[in-house]
Figure 1 (cartoon, rainbow over the protein chains, first blue to last red):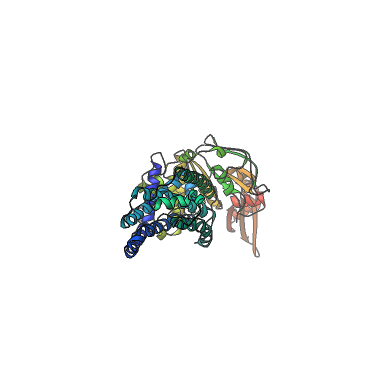
Figure 2 (tube, rainbow over the protein chains, first blue to last red):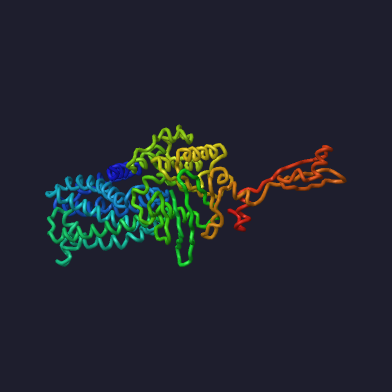
Length: 226
Length: 281
């Protein structure tokens, strides 16, 4: 009940801040790009577009959301409410995944992707991973500049190998690298059982870490510079 | 409602709160008074379960604060000194959102807005509210789930005299309903008017704890100061409980020679300075 309410209010909050409008515009632009590239490039272009934007938007948007919340002292309100950190995290992760999935379904359809369900599953898992990274970083920083600085290493270790993996120019053992597993799914490929297992283990670790970080943020009452 | 025994807390190696013990009964308004950095907010954070690494015991509503679960907050309402609302949402949207976080039935939002005179501003974004309006909104947010314990941090700060009066009446009305209220304030007048008992906190220790009346009376009786003209202006003072012994005053009254007469009693601020040697700023 409370989780459902948090999820719906997160969607309302994101809509008020123009997230949906922004992604509607971006999706139209990306579809235009997909129509502009040669037919043989479409699938890989769609995979790169989905992975690098809708799927990873949580990394950047969680920073914005949490910094905004810190500046308005709402973490203090959550700290003295019956909301559990995990409920807050699941609501944020699922509401941002909803935007990722909506954009991904349009882009994958425009590219004529064969395994739409695998693409969407890959998008959802990637979105969860990036959003959780976003939560962990955003809870620890107090300004937008710090956030931008902290996201750079995440981008390097996540985007570089994944794009190289898409073009099959990575060593064989890197197919189990979690973001490579995600990229494989986003491009419509079926991942190995071991790959899925590793991704699930990473998700579990990120959920536990983010729970710890959110609880710590709620306990401290300082504001932030935006 | 609250039982604190040998409570100590420290942010560093230096103790910040040391060996505090007190209790607060149900239906009581209990005030924490002290200068900035004295430990009032830290103590409040311990009691609302935000700081759990303390020594000793702090029981609230029968629950040791360090072992509280999230259900603990179904019965606690906290009004922070600053706004904790989403600025882009309207007041009503904010209250609807925070209501939805509680399992118990919450109070009607329109009724609460009307209580603090915001019934015509409910659809306004909080970003467009003045400081006083935000303060009133924050207060009713703490009342939403009808909590047994209310923790109020400077509830009248930033309010004009009319709204300050309204706020104080609402606090007294909550007490009349049996709610326990913890009040943290610098404002001695509010404390004297609202609190059943107050604790003076300085350097993390309770220096005095009693009702405002008892603390004031402990300083001694009020004095009467009077002036008269007799080859220039003269003045004299006399304790109010020994007026009938003052022959000079009796003579001046009999001859209608008094220029002025004033009674003055010590206030809570005087007592605070007397006991702690510090002001409340």
